[in-house]
Image: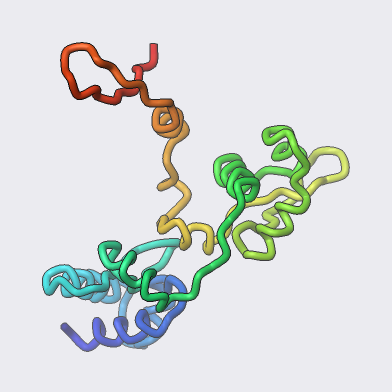
Length: 194
């Protein structure tokens, strides 16, 4: 590995969040944006080729060194990592509405979910998963909410465009049905849309 790749590795190892290529470029005044990208690719290949237990992942607009998913269960069992509190069903529903509809106001969220969302919105803001991104032009100029970089980081996404498409979700959420026609081992299937 070249010295720039080693410098980037040290910075990424010590970081607790994804670091952008622009931030990494500030580490070496002689490094160009292209040089940083080449060094990042060299670092990624180094981890992949030598089958390290960690990998370089691009997420939330930046880069981070993370444990490979194959080792996650063993590390979780050993309790080496700090557990973040789990999200409730109401929090997840509200977060999904915001992720897919942003920028979105509280009234629209409540209309979709059918329940009050004030407490859930406060909870999501306290966890830095959502933020106020503006104001609506509607009467009273209500606040509009959007997701944060931490939301992307927790889901392991580079950008909101990486969220599953609504059409993919409707297919994935359909109930599976068993069929006994033709064979003894009933196969589960998802009925095709008409």
